Every structure is written in structure tokens, then in C-alpha cells.
Length: 412
Image (cartoon, rainbow, N blue to C red):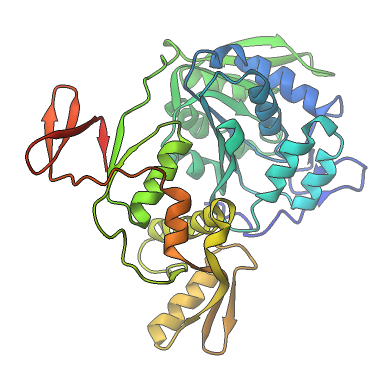
């Protein structure tokens, strides 16, 4: 298994005046116009924006995040043509992330993307492998960027894409990005009627897509390339689903976090809580769990810590009492776990550092739970939910006397 560097790609090269990967001896963007290529090959090649009209949720996935330009082109088009109340979910895999300074140098050429690009770079991964979520709340858009091997990233994703952008370096330079196994995994992570697009017309790419179940067609290429590929999976595009009715019982930190997440997905939950909400502690520590157990568990906890810190900083900055914490490591077991945590590559390079008494966690937060809850909660119904009952319409939330308080599709 190829293990990506846990830091930004040190082999980005500007010596020719154009951004190249010395690792793969290939350019990051077309010399004929990088943004124009994104629009012609990927957006038009996947039928956008027409295919997201009338949809409540649309998902696009990508192999090869690179400078982020494809995702910026999508976000700009989405901002102009977004169906009212709909959400856009983006997924991208990148084994060797660029330094944010290199991305900024590319982005400066596209003034009409400046605001979106600034937002993207403010959330740019700082060295940690694994999943990173970038958000544009005003657009109802999220991007899950996975830093790691593409095959593992796609296999570990539980989404189904309506469109796939295949944008790795040239197959002759980076064959792993176009392998038959990876293209099969791409097909397995497609919604019915999904479309895929790429600038490459290499025989191995065409044959790999066809073997994975796609119908492939050659289309007029962009710039100096005579042809490009569009691919289709059989089936009808997923119909728009109704927004689920969500009920949440309890208004502690977990309940408040669920309410925030539901609203971010376009739902408006009904929230019930009676009496004291949460523990009443004056402060809470947000700190990572030390490496222990399986690699997947370590990845999950690292991602959860990173995501929590990011959300609190952006959505509830007033709840932060202090930043940074010393994690005491007194036993040999703890010291070993601290070392493995630092060496895991799952944390941003400037987050963890050894200290005399343990491990300094620069990104740890001390927060005021009441302020945090208030930022995330929304309206709360003070009636008590005594029981749940299954009914034809979903789940009935019942009072102690059996009175129905609400009907929901999903209850937390």
C-alpha cells in the first residue's frame, strides 16, 4: 500500500513558470486555460447544471483534488443556478496535497473565483491524512476532502455520486489513479444514472470504465486535445426525496450537535427536552483521544477531533474559553500511545508536540458548554417525551398520558 506523505507535497515545481508535479512529471492544469478546461470537460461533460435542477440534494465526486479548481468551478456554477433549498455534497481524494501557497498562486489568476477560493484556502488541510470537511454554509455546500490513497479513500466513502470527475495525472505517469480496481470502485459509488467525465482517452481508461459497467463515448476535446471521454451508468437519475421529519429528545451537547447537523442538511428538527440540559459543568475540554486499538478507530477519533474544533471555531467562537492543553502522560502505556499519536500522520503538523510532562495539543479547546449549546440548539419544546410508538406515518413521540406530541421519520 502506498502511504502518502503526511505533509504537503514537497515536489510541486514552478521552475517552468507553470505548476508541475516533479513526482509525476506532469502539469496540474491545462496550458490552454485551467478554469475553461474544468467547465468544458467536467461540468459540461457531466451535464451540469441541468442535472441538478429539481434536486434537493446532488453529489459530485472527484479523483485528483490538486489545486481545487474543479471544485471551485462547481461551487461558482452552483451559486448561480442552485435549486432553492437544495444542498450540494462534494467528495475528492488527493494523495499528495499541495501547499496552500501553491494553490493561492494558481487561484490568483481567476479573479471571479476570489471569494470562493479564499474560503477554500482558509479551510485547507494542514498536513493531516484522512478526511477533512470544508463548508460553504451560505451555499448549502460541503466538500469532504480525503488525503490518502485514492483506492482506500473511495472504498471508505459511503456516498453515491451523481457525477464523477476523473482528473488524476496522465495514466502513463500515474497508472494507479486509473487502475481497473479503482474504476470498479468508482462505479460502485455511483447513484443510478450517474455520469463520469475525463480529459483522458487512453485505451486503458476507456476499457476500465467499460469493464466497470459504464457506457463510454468520445466527445470533442478541449484545447489541444482532440477528444475527451464521457461515461454513463444505466438507470434513471435519483428522484428528489422529501425532507425527512426529524425529532431529537434531549438538549445536551449531543442533542445540540444533532440539531445543527440536521439544519445544515436542510431539515428543521423538532427538539424536545425537559429539565436541566447537560451536566451543568462550567467548562469542557475538547481534546483528541490517544492512539489505541485499530487504525480505523484512530482515524475516526482524529477526524472527530479535527471536525469538532473546526465547527466550534466557525459556528460558536464565543464559547471558547482557552486554546491549547497539556495532555499528561504518566504511565509507559500513555507515553507509548502519545508517541504513536504524534507519528500517525492523522493530525495537522502543528497540532501535537512533545512536552516535559506529556503532549502539548495546540488545537485543543476549553469551551463553555452553555454557550456552545445555545449556538447550536435552536427552538426546544419543553414537553417530556415518555415513549415512542410505531405508527403508519413513522414514529409517534408520546407523552406520559399517551398523547402524541409529534410524528417523525427519524428519532434521536
